[in-house]
Image 1 (cartoon, rainbow, N blue to C red):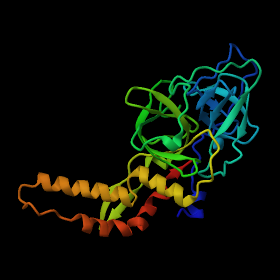
Image 2: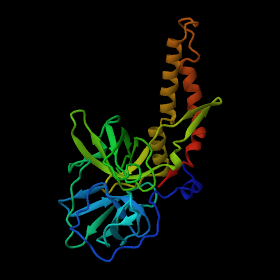
Image 3: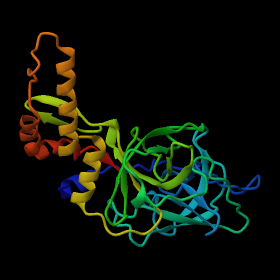
Image 4: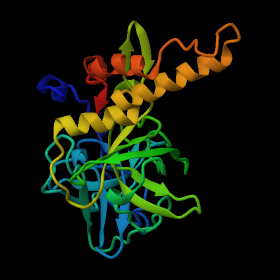
Length: 300
C-alpha cells in the first residue's frame, strides 16, 4: 500500500512558470488536440476536443476549479492568446489517482480544432485488452512537433477511475495530453488524459537476492468518464504491473531470463536451469516489500 509519506512526495507534472498574458487576440482562436495550455499555475497539454459536448479535456491537477485557460507556445515560452476558457474539475477527482480529468468551457468565439492524434472516437477503457498499442503526445516530450510515444495498454481500474500503460515515461508539462489506443488495422480511439508518470524518469526497480531488476517505463491516465474511486493499493498494483515489477511481472521476467540462460549456455546439461519455476515463484512471492523502491518515483 502507498503511504501518506508517498502521496505527499508526488511531484506535480504541470510545469509552473510566471506568465504575462497578452491583452489581445491577434488571430482566430482554434485550440487543437496536443496544444500547450497555461492554467494560471502551470503548463499542461490539451487532451481532447469533444465537439458534441462543446468542451475540451485536460488533467484536473493542472489547475484549480474556475481557473482561466490560455494557449501557450513552449518554444517561445510565451502565451499566444489571452485567457479564453474556464477549467472545471471532475467532481470525482480526489487529488490522487481517481478521475484526474477536467473540462474546459471555451469563451464565445473560440472554435475547437481537430483531434489530430486520436481522432474523435472514444474507447471504453474497461473493454481494452491488455497489450493493445497505446500512445501519448505531450508538449514537453514532443515540444513543437507531432511526434508521439507508444507502448502497450496494461489494465484499467475496476471502477474505471484510471488506467495504467507501459509507455515511455512522460515529463512535466505533458499532463493532460491525449492517450489513445490503436488496433492492428490502424483504427484509433481516444482513451484518456495523461495523469502521472515516473519522477525524474526513474521507473523504479525490485531487488531479488541482490539482483536489481529495473522497471519498465509506465504512465497513469484518466478516462474522461466519471469512475469509482481508485484505492491506493489498487493504483499501486496497476502501476507496478505496468512497470513489470509486480509479482506476476517479476515471475514472467525471471522465468524468461532463466529459459534464455538455458538456451545460451553450451556448458549446461538439459536440466541445468539455475532455478525451476517453483523456485522462482518462491522468491517472487515475498518480493512485494522490494517494490517499495517505486513508491518515491511517481509524479503528477
